[in-house]
Image (cartoon, rainbow, N blue to C red; front, side):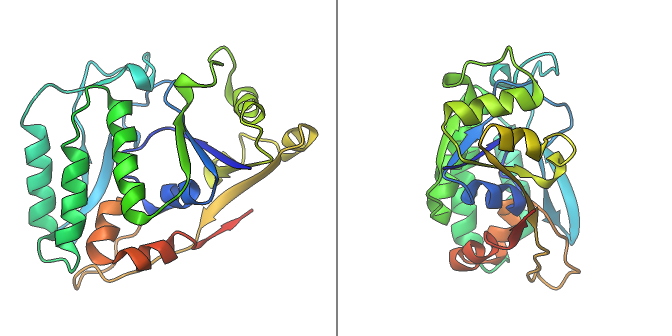
Length: 232
């Protein structure tokens, strides 16, 4: 069984979804510390040919809290403002109608906790893209917050009876293949290949939120992009 573990990211870029699609079980790592100015509640879209960073407002967010302890802002206006920005940016995109409907449904989900909101959004997104991976939150299953770093990842793999653990390429300096092999677990790192598609008539801006990719590509094309990676 192939396993991956990642913090919940809101409407992530294709590399995140390649990892999700490439395993049998995907653990949303929601009981680790929230990261300020990370990708948990921020992402980038294309506005007037340039990358635009948007941030989901939170209530009393702190790196001293776990992700599943963070709540969305009570401000009723931010969802509408974000949707208006996306609408104005992409209303002339070829797949705007279907992509906006999915995005709107995700943004308007009625959840108070950030981690629940992102997890519920993933259910809609993977259904749209026909991704079959089982998605589970770490907080409700593994009960191992007393462990840290590689030791905790190994413990989750063992509890899940995973034979193969796949991690983003950025973790190459954090995890030791020899240690995993000693525990009878194969370790690989996923490396996304360059992906280019038309973004109106602009110079291509890579690695934006999946929202951008959905606006310019149909589901079949995106499913092909999901396999554009290598394991190292």
